[in-house]
Picture: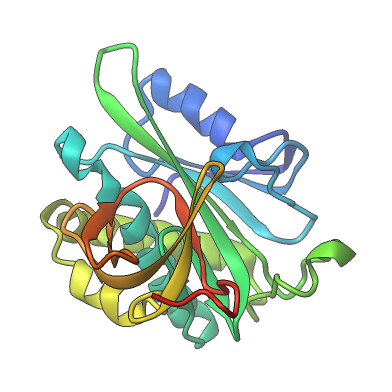
Length: 240
């Protein structure tokens, strides 16, 4: 039985889970809420959390070196994909590094935040927000956001936590990466790399062992991107 605490409403499940982790909460301790009033995504963005979605944060205590922590978010994306397949019988696509798509629309975002607890032990809080069929999306998001056809949010949350638990060795060893690559629709595409205010059109080649994105730049050089994010819709005239 997974250790999941459910709330009707919270400002942020990540904040609540982080407080619990700092106090020594064990791996896979989970905080879930039907609605968040101050949900957030990567780079400080607001994450819309209307009633009815699956919003939850999981405490992880992976045995990873600092250089390997980049594996956490891509593995989490794969775990969500597996859980959705199990509970809703649909396959999601992964857009590097933290988005999942259904029929071309974003249905899930993932935010990883690390820290150290009161005993000096490291932890990661994994925040996951999944739009489900019951979600009411704001009008401004309807063109880009979709919903997973899932009728039981609690079953979906439990399935994700179970997949995270069962796949811990995969994450720590990097053995999940071939499955991640197969599901990642970013690979083999010209994409727009976004890193703060910087924009660069690159070609996505592969996923590195640390979870980074290996890209080919316009001058033919290659690099591995660890931070930042990508858009799958670069400007029509952008070619490399």
